[in-house]
Image (tube, rainbow, N blue to C red):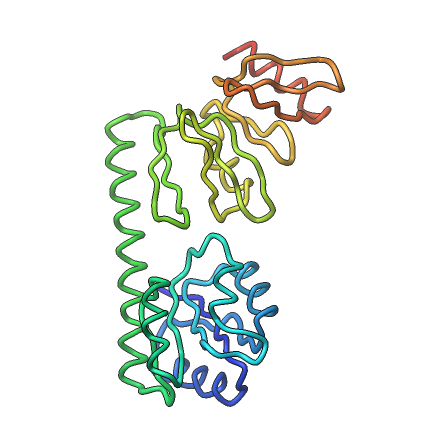
Length: 249
């Protein structure tokens, strides 16, 4: 499997050296960003959704930990890079996969990359297997969805989803008796996945479970009241389709 990787180091020669080592000795690693500052790193990580970030601890514009405190959720693996071994203790507190001391040892680099690849493969396999088995037992309809959050993987029954709301490049799932769950995927992906399963995109920002609709209110241009008492906007272009879908539910 191919891993998308970002290198964050304020020393250009260090970035180039690591990029060369990865290119020559670590198969299936695609460098999608080579960054030298805290601000640029935050933007790059947020927009490219990498699988792994090689993160220098000490940067001229701050520290690697400054970056991590501003990225939510952290849904990628971290390999810290440092010239100071004492930073390994703090790295462990951030649940890093590994750390590399400068100058980087090739064997240690290859071992760290293999750990990331193995973990990503296992996550994908476990997710696919568990959701597949559950849904096959519940044929013919999909009844459960796997959501990757900052805390791990959550398997959510569709009947427990009240609605989904776009939050930039993220999606918030509002659930029965559980508040909300934030996932680092666009709402469009879930619109496609949940098509024909009593879910409908009624607004650019909202995908709703039609079974959880309590009222359609005509006032103030029209809005929808959901079972948790939240109100959801509805686009003018979606009103007719929404009312038709509700009448056939």
